[in-house]
Length: 102
Image (cartoon, rainbow, N blue to C red):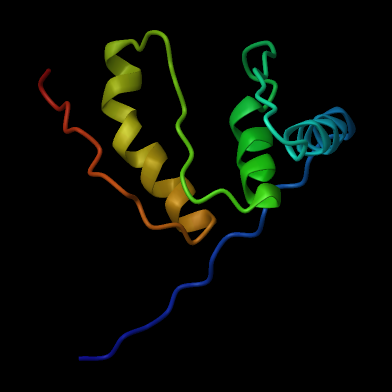
C-alpha cells in the first residue's frame, strides 16, 4: 500500500479589519482573568478570526456556539468541521453528530 500525503491548503489571508480584530482580541484575552464575546455581522469571518485568535493563544480546545441551524446547515456541519480540521492540522476531539435524514 502506498501512502500519498496530499498538500494542505494555505491559510486564508485576513482582511485588514479581521487582522485588527485578531490583534485586539489576543491582547485582551492574554490578560489574566479576561473573557470576551466577539460579535460581528454574518459573513464577516468570525470563525476565521476566532481560529486565528485560538491559534495565537495556543488554545487546546475551542467551542463554537451556534444559536440555530437550518436543516441545510446541520447536513453541512460534518464537512465544515473536517475542512477546518484538515486546514489547520487539528484532531477533532469528538465525532460530529450525523444528521443525514434528520
